[in-house]
Image (cartoon, rainbow, N blue to C red):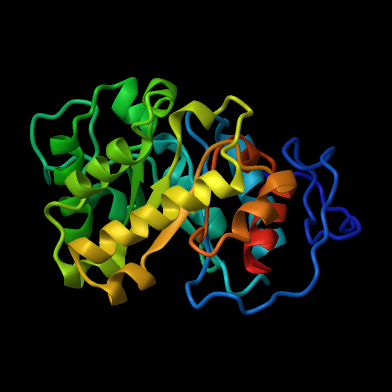
Length: 290
């Protein structure tokens, strides 16, 4: 496996590999962490349908170099399916976990193009995204399908990241909470209280994904608070307080600190910025320090 040539770490960085993903991005520095929340922040890097084999391995290597000594923050990367095993070989024995971008709700059978939870576990996957807005709105996944995927993911022992969020039209119609909470309720419909420890919620306003637009911290906090209150009503206050809720939607180093200062935002599901090791690490540092 080729990681690129070695170099001295740049100021504020532990990265020792030269790669296209982190070579020209400025490094960021944050002060020492505080203890403002008992929930461990979780930062996920959703690479979507990006990177090649070599560039993906380089990116994973740089991420490991830069975040491996960061404690009090969970870090997961979600590469494309063909590269899962190769990325696992890079991040194995590090603090970075391997995630998958999707799952099918059957163990095996005539489901061309799909991947089961058992298959994912065999290549080292420990976390899976379910219900991402692109799965809902491009591929037409229904709440029923998503709830089945959540159930099977938990049954397989995987961490399940349930993604929920409203479109621009729904937001402008004033239906944000109606849409988001209905998706939450449907997605968790097959989940018992004892299983919620395996669940992370990712609130990702569809209108902010890949657009450069980001919900204000105040708007994001309002939705996150409503999600936590809904979990309280569905289960109990203890489960509501232990459940981590990520924000997703054009998260960058420049806005991460303000987002993570909100009491109900427990990390981020990062898209484009996760393709740069430096930007991704800066977001991890911001979460660690929140």
